[in-house]
Amino acid sequence: MEKRVKFKGLWLPMLLVLPQLLITAIFFFYPAGQAIWQSLFIPDPFGLSMQWVGLGNFEFLLADRYYRASFFTTAVFSILVTVVSMGVALYLAVLADRLVKGSGTYRTLLIWPYAVAPAVAGVLWLFMFNTRVGVVTWYLGLLGYDWNHVLNEGEAMGLVVVASAWGRISYNFLFFLAGLQAIPRSVIEAAAIDGAHFWTRFRTIVFPLLSPTTFFLLVVNIIYSFFETFGVIHTI
Image 1 (cartoon, one colour):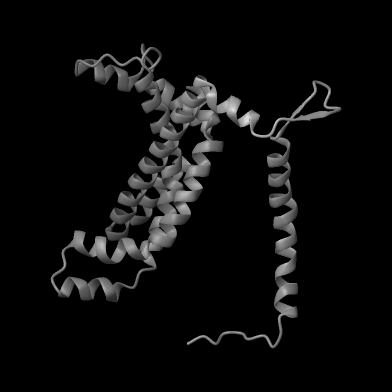
Image 2 (cartoon, one colour):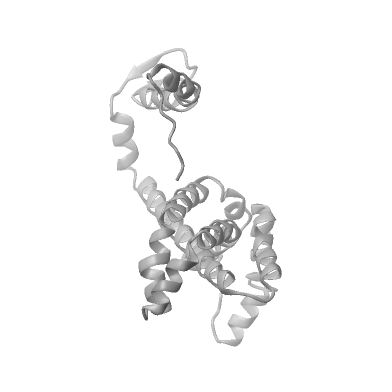
């Protein structure tokens, strides 16, 4: 059992934490506070003076139907990218954790997409779903489905979501696999001896123990979907 370090006073722990607190305050809290404060004003075209409007900027923004539509589209896109990328990554991590032969090759192939730049990934998916020469489009045509993401907003959203999620699956896969391998095998084996099936073990033991990893990936993927998918969107 590890021994916890105990300090006699509060001065030393506070001094140890002070650098991190200063960095957080200077580079996070101060800019965030400045942004909130400036949002309550309207500057003149030259930036020499500002007029107090209170919450008028927010009222004007929320009253714009185009902004509300774009906000809703962005929220749907973020949720879909996060759910698809994390769901597929968790499924592949479970398969890799149970795989015995060829596990190294399997993991290497799954990691490769993470090294592809977003713009390059967008070009690859655009070629595959091109309305004239796309391979996937050609197969869909054989099945009687006329794919055209240029004219269909639902298909355009689906293509952008799949392309964005594809580039994030490898990242999520690494963390989920590390989390699965950190779970004590004795706990899972004991549940199996008691007669618990795979789904029961996963639902009651494995997934709860993965909750810290899942929460971390949830936050990271939401940030990714908001700020790191412009290359894919602009390319497609």
